[in-house]
Image 1: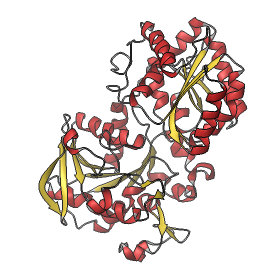
Image 2 (image 1 turned 135 degrees about the horizontal axis):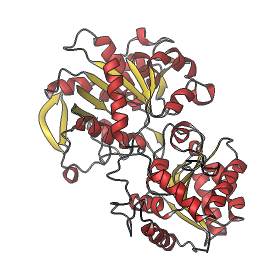
Image 3 (image 1 turned 90 degrees about the vertical axis):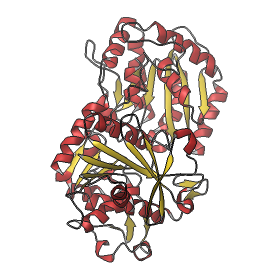
Image 4 (image 1 turned 90 degrees about the horizontal axis):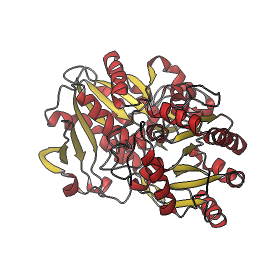
Length: 470
């Protein structure tokens, strides 16, 4: 098949979260399975063109310059340039909030996807794979063009996070010539405003989201963010497919960021990683202490308030914390306050450092993810591969990937809790501590986790099924 994969960010060129990782790994996996894949993304001003080997093409579409980089897998990554829209410090906003013209920016992007593919000779396109609200208008545009294009292009729309919907004043209907015929409860209208995520859901041929449990959760008021009823109306075209892991980048046997490498048959290198991590973050490596890692956006969705509120109880136990993240100021202040009070027991880095993220995954004994909701999550799957036992709230992809090991002799791979309350988090840590006190039991849990396979190939096969259905 010929597949155009459209995303507002693609690693390593642009990244704010998991979408960028998916937009890099899934097209690569599809190409390895024999498909022709073109990825299209904006050319942001922050992208170093020379460093990434991105060069202009002779093609201009509606007077829009187009740039290209061909990956080793054969995937063509196409960058759409627009100085006014994309040459800015941020992708979606800055310190003052979201850019006020985001509807215009990403409608421009959406309307150039198929014309760019056509102009570059990539056709006829079989599948237009769209991702999140930034590409929602493309589903509407394709639905309107049905029968006017060569071939039988069909659209698949992936929801990575229902919490981000791209909602704008209805005046953009006329400003962007979206057509009032689509401004209906069955289309883009949402409480008398325009909702780009809802537009993608309404007009795509098939809809996917990034884990089976999250596909069920978004059909409930708790996780549907006002669209649960609308999602239920399209449930016959909704599929949950778990994201995969790029084991070329996340593998303790080959990880270039680690001071020592290791595998499931020899964990000696993990002890070295732990020691060096404690030194790097100024943590006192006390005898018998369980080092718990956290790498997260510091936001309510990630359950950081549960962690902040649980820290006093955790400090009463033989637990140390290694935390990396950035986000909302009140969570930063809460963690910095805890760090000042527990200098030797909490290592804290505010910001993001790719190497440190890898070293926390390798050096920690356990990894905490107390998310209020988590469409898929990747860190718990990294943790399993690194022999770092995950402690997670059982929601979304966390529920799909971590098996509770509380029952002795079970094939559990981590520890889970359900109640979004600090006491439930502490209880899960207590259960982990009891297992940690018995090295043979802990080693069993580590090895079962390291034996799990969440590679992209299985996920790509599921997407192939959806493409064929479309």
